[in-house]
Structure formats: structure tokens, C-alpha cells
Amino acid sequence: MDPRQRWKGVFPAVTTQFRDDFSLDTAATAKVIGALIDDGVSGLIVGGTVGENTALTLAEKQELVETAVAVSAGRVPVIVGVAEYTTELAATTARMAAKAGAHGLMVLPAMVYPAKPRETLAHFRGVAAATDLPIMLYNNPPAYRTDVTPVMLATLADVDTIVAFKESSGDTRRIVDVRNMTGDRFIPLCGLDDVVLESVLLGAVGWISGMSNIFPREGETLFRLARDRRLDEALPIYDWFMPLLHLDARADLVQSIKLAEHIAGRGGLLTRPPRLPLEGAERDEVEAIVRKALATRPVLPDVGLPPLKA
Image (cartoon, rainbow, N blue to C red):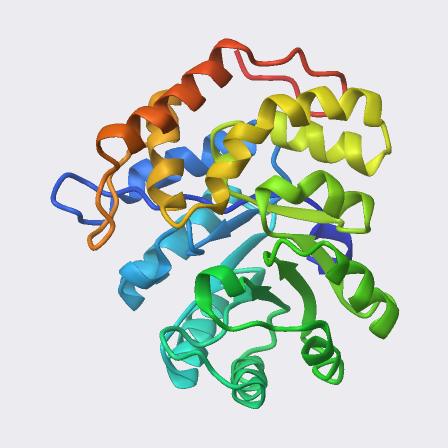
């Protein structure tokens, strides 16, 4: 799957489903993935932040990747999150993902340690050397305290397998800065839900999305309208979507997204500790946002999505 042709559109960062004893629920995760594909999403991110990557063992990650690849059956790309504490652990995960049939990797800076720029660059090079899979670098300084700047990204242009960047800083200007520095060398992808329209207008060709787990058709429709500059149709959907999209920018985005999935009947709300379910006013706030959105879903214009299954 050529990433320049296939890493476009909406890629939900898929949730990982757990049983009541916190064990991995492969069957439930497969159901979530199948429903997203049926709704017309363009690809899948498994084992990302929303997929609770750092709460999974390597064996569980392998089971998750194999499940996603089997359910996808080549219909959409499956990209695997690599978020580890050391470069060697990240390289091991990358090799596992390749063996399990993944189509690409989404690589984060090393976890816990807020690395210096040269350390972050060495980490990315080390992971890239472990596999021939195409790589998307994931920049999310608010969450992970390490900033992969456009200048840093430009220095990695000599690594052929690093082909894309997911920008989650919220600074949409970086899409333009990277393009000015490197031309079309890197595929630009939006990684923060509540700046997606702006990001697409500035050149992002894909959206790694949290809330498209719950509203995949609305997500794909909004993305395609923005891509095609159908702004009169896109803006009302964006207005409706925005309270939901803000949930993706919270520190408790995983719990918020899983609660929304649960309310919409698309998945379970259980997260692995130390993440705990939302309570009190926080839960009430998210529930109110989701229920209002469900009650006021917009009529979607035709953007070429497959018809819904009966």
C-alpha cells in the first residue's frame, strides 16, 4: 500500500476494548474495527494514544495488530502506534508490527523522558533502521513534552522510510513551514481533532481522529468537504462537531472518547489503570455533549461514502 496514495482521509485512532477484568477483548475490538470500516473510514491507527498503547504488553499489541489486519483484509491501511520507553523497545515493537502484517508505523518520541532534539532524532532513526515499513512521525508536545519542530523533521529527509508527519501541536502553521522547508517530501496529516478543517485547508491530506471513532461518517464527510473546498457545506458540520472535537484535546481524551463510544453503542468505556472512568461533573459534561450531538446529527451531503449496511 503506497502511503502517498493510501494515507489520505480519516484514520480513527481505534480504541482497545477490555473485559471487566481488564484483559484484552479481541472479539470486541474486532467488532469496533469492522464497524468503522463499514462506515467508510479511510484507514486505521491501532495501538495509538487512544488505543492505550503504553498499557499493553508486546504480546497484546501483536494480537491487536493481527486482529486489525485480519478484519481489514486489505480494504484499508493498518498503521501501528510505536510508543515505548527506549529505542530498543520501540525497534522491537516495529519489527513485531511488520511481522504481524501492518502497513505502516506511527512513531512517537521515547516516552517519559523529555529528550533533547538530537536524542529524539536518534530515536526516530533507530526505529526506522529496524524495519522497512513506512513511518509517520507523531508530534504532540502538549501530551508528551517533546516537540518535533519543522526544522527537526527536515533533518530526517534522508531517511527514506520516514514519509509522513502527524501534527498535534495545534499550530497549523507548521504544515506550511514543513512544506516551505521540504516541499512535498513528507505527507502532512492532522492529529488534533479541533483544528482539522484549518489543517486540511492548509494542505493536510489525512486526519488521525479520536472522535471519528463515534461519528465516522460525519468525520469522513467533514474531511472530504474541506478537501474539496465545499466550505458552505463543511462549516455547519464543523460547528456541530466542535464541542465533540474539543474532547480530543483534553488530558483525559481516552476516557472521554470511550465514554462517548459507550453512549453511542459503538464500544466499551473501560480503560486500564492508571486511567480511571470519568466521574461526577466531568462525566456529566461529556455525556451532555455526546447526547446533544446524537440528538442533533446533521443531514450529511453526498461525498461518495459507501451506503450504510441495512
